[in-house]
Image (cartoon, rainbow, N blue to C red; front, top):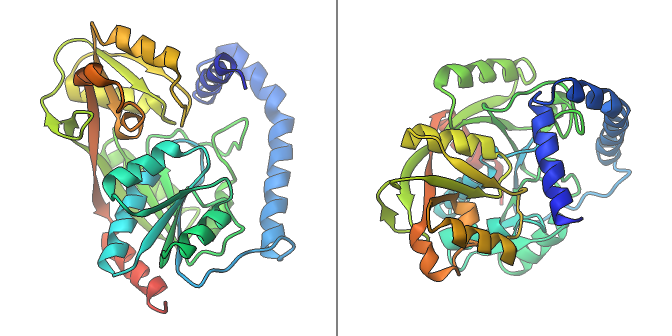
Length: 341
């Protein structure tokens, strides 16, 4: 797809889903009604096909843990997958992480966190998992795997961001990949928060409890920890004008977070999720770096390591994962689901 068209559609739909298009949004909503209905039928048929074994499901001889979303957008899957990875190491497993074919940035980030680990990106997460096992993985973590039903999993974890404005609308009218009834397949639901407070997060917990009355629910705070440079060393907070340069799923949340930390307004250059920066984008960045401090995420930073002298003006936002509810229950479930392997 044409680069400008892809970026334009990304902005259009993010504004549409947030109700920012006024009367044009209502018109678009009417036009997309039938597409959403068709999408729901396809999703329901696909789930039923796997449930009744009309479509094949692969079973591996190692535990498989899926970390996924009910909706599109960033919920903290990658940092939580890292947490699972570290728990697996402590349990003396050799973990392998499987990401989608578009997620080169995520694979590079995993390699940065755990050099020498088994990290596979593949359009088919089943094929990626088989490759990981052949390389010695004794436990598989599927990053963004909730809708990947072709691989049997032993633990199904769903992440839900408290910042999202949820409705019952599915794609393309809303951000849901499937209806809330899909949570029936989850073993554990985790509410994450970055910018909202405990009160809002707990309200989301109560809302989700109405859909998953017998499921276990946890809550995590992805909390600002420090500023890093491009090499990963801790640096002071940027002083002066800030330009946020990012290609993540929820840039609005990042902008809100950076502005709350620095107590100043920022400017932003936003690209679609997992976007591969082109030469023209990096030329733009170099020009802006003469007058701005460039703020970006860890996921974006792995794609900017080769910029040389300009990198001294790049500040990377580092977040820590902090459990607020459900950690012990999650640990017990992990132990139960992996004990027989």
